[in-house]
Image (tube, rainbow, N blue to C red; front, side, top):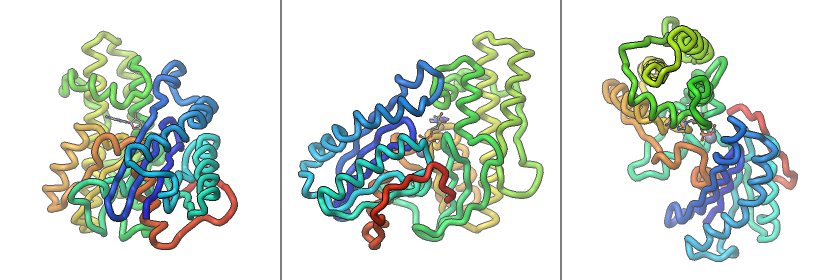
Length: 331
Ligand code: KG4
Ligand code: ZN
């Protein structure tokens, strides 16, 4: 089975080909960062329009990269949700039209499921069952994964997602969109001793997260301490340390609670090196192995959709005849 994966849930157009026999055959990505940077955040209408222009040329580029013809495709997968409705509709419509023209099965995929399966594309993939920390721009979730499709959400953010907190804090510090990677770079120059921000919800039992109070603490600090370059870097460092330490505390708790031997960290914030290093230490101390997707597959991409699609299509699942996307879709 050779599956074309199409990701258009937000501001990246990602296309990829995955085959059961040969693994990942091709992947192509167009990021809309430059388009949205002018506005300081994603503009949904612009996102949809750009996806429309990019999706077919990128599909063609995947076929060329893999040395395949359109007729070689035996399944198509697309992101059905969660995400921006208009952006999702582009991927869904293209996927379903191609599948109709080629008479092959098509399936809508849950974007967060695809994120948590992304480490399966790496050498030495994690074994089921595992614990997954999903940290993206829209979600922060701790999920117990028994097998594909068997997920139990153990904890999630009660307010902002981790990536959202990074982006909002970066904006406060005057960094361009998208803020996460910029804030990480700035934090490298920061003094870890200067500011100590709260570790929200770590002083009570449970595995939920909250990041809005942390953002308020940053606002107040910036107001008092000013915005000279070193203070900016020190705030960035203090903020990142607070997020990383909060995650470390919750992950340690979750590993103890579940006895999981494998931890997966996925989603855009999973590209943060400080987080990766800290969680590797925590997992090892608890006798667990941690698996990360490569950096390019932490953020949105078509490869994870092609892979998740392949797993489910190979198990016989496929969409019925209607096109419906699910902008809000619980896991
Ligand atoms: O998974 P993703 O690409 O899109 C969603 O599904 O939301 O995640 C994007 C989020 C953004 O909030 C971005 O700022 C954050 O991931 N991000 C990072 C880093 N790279 C991306 N946050 C912190 N450090 C990074 N290196
Ligand atoms: Zn994502």
